[in-house]
Length: 76
Picture 1 (cartoon, rainbow, N blue to C red):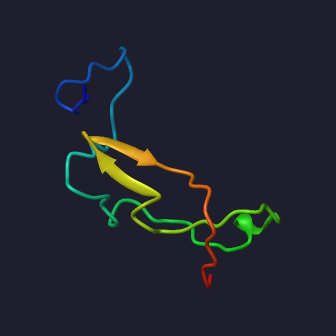
Picture 2 (tube, rainbow, N blue to C red; picture 1 turned 135 degrees about the vertical axis):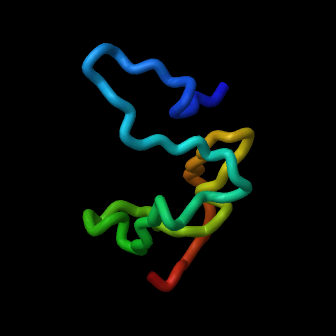
C-alpha cells in the first residue's frame, strides 16, 4: 500500500514536506541520482556502484535496490 501526501496524517506539529510514491514506470532521475563508482564507493569494497536498471527499478510502486553477485567490470 502506498501512502500519498494527501492521505498521510502527520502527528500534531509535523508537516509532510516531501514524498516519493514510485508510481511511475521508472525511477525519476530528476528526483534521484545514482552513485557510480568502480571502487566500492571509495573505501576499497569489492563492489561496483552502477546506474544499471538491473540494480535499481520500480516494481508494484516500490523502489527495488538489488545487489547482484556477478562478474561485472564496469569502466567507472
